[in-house]
Length: 323
Image (cartoon, rainbow, N blue to C red; front, side, top):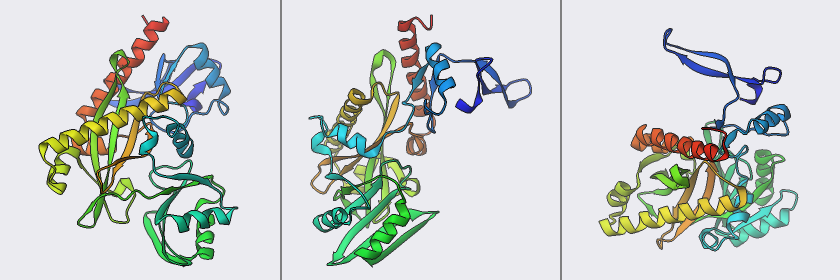
């Protein structure tokens, strides 16, 4: 979008549907009062003219201009009493300090090593100690899984090749409940709505084959139905767990807002361990809501978009930007 800004005309090129020709077309529009950032990163430093124009026009940006740093969000959440107890052990590390990695790899049974900025599990490697000096690794790259067992020295070579110069951190693996060689995590989709209310648009179970942690290739189900079919939860047990899931998701949303400011929407990944304890895996801005669409269709997506824009319109009206 920033590349489509015309500085001289103070207009922006957009796409619209021409009903007469029944085709999508492009033209220049006046700067909008509300922008919904669905994906990508808008960095004010890279687009100073566009940023200045939006500020002078009092444009409201739904969703932050950049995605959340995965380790930074952990640092913010661990400071809040409502979320700190639900976070797995996490440490910032560097590939230049071999002793750090050796320490944590030998201390924990299994870990995930993650880039602070990554999407769709592309910057994630799982590592498990098998025996002294031997480590099993798994990561997803270019459409295929890469797995094996190597020495610590060879693991370091793999890590440098995989992460290059990216900042990384290490996180203890959550002992997720399992059945029939599968695990699952929970994706909740939240957004601000009318009267500034936080709404949970949906709770989805993402089922993974053991060892697979890539959400894009996982199977998605309605959480309530999945708990009954796969884990034989009673109605009361399902109701109680889903209430806890929603509360923790809303607490996570609020905790992040105290640090980052208003958020338009957020997708939160939670895990449940073998003792029934909930864990916060990570939060993601500008969620594509793919799992929600797969399970519930387009209706909840359309409703969430309408409610988010209703929230944004109310803000702009209070500011006097909109009538």
